[in-house]
Structures are given as structure tokens and as C-alpha cells.
Image 1 (spheres, helix red, strand yellow):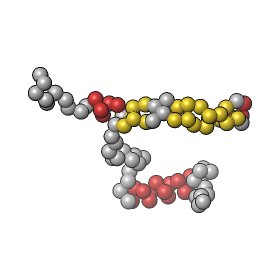
Image 2 (cartoon, one colour):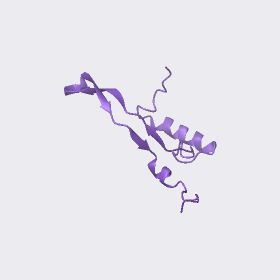
Image 3 (tube, helix red, strand yellow):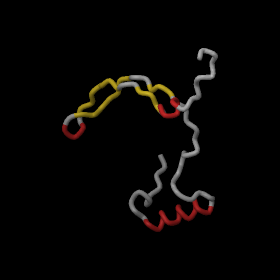
Length: 85
């Protein structure tokens, strides 16, 4: 695994160089992934390991509920075009 030394440790000079580099490449601001199109979907229920108790030392297998992701996009789907009305 390659790790950039300095940025996470608070090296302000390295941070300024990286910001200047991204601005030269036309990326201003931190909006990575904002243009990605998403679709509504159902996240399935499953079991997951959750670390519990003092110091998060004991792993437990717990159920995770399913959910609808991006529900607001599913509500925008046009309906009512059928001849049932």
C-alpha cells in the first residue's frame, strides 16, 4: 500500500501544492462524484459484524434492515399515462 507522507500529518505546504495542481487541471472545489447519475434501488437486508462493548473489542453479528435508496428519485417517475382513468 502506498501512502503519501505529510498530507494526513498536517503538512500545509504539500496541501497547497496539491490544491494548486488540481486547480491547474481545471478542478476547483471538492465535488468528487457529484455528476454521477444515480438510480433508486432497494438495499437488501443482511447481517453485519458490529464491534461492541467497551473499546469496541467484541464483534457481534447483527441484522441490518433493508431500505430504499434515493427514494425521492423514484417519486419523480411520471405516472398516469395509461387509459385506466
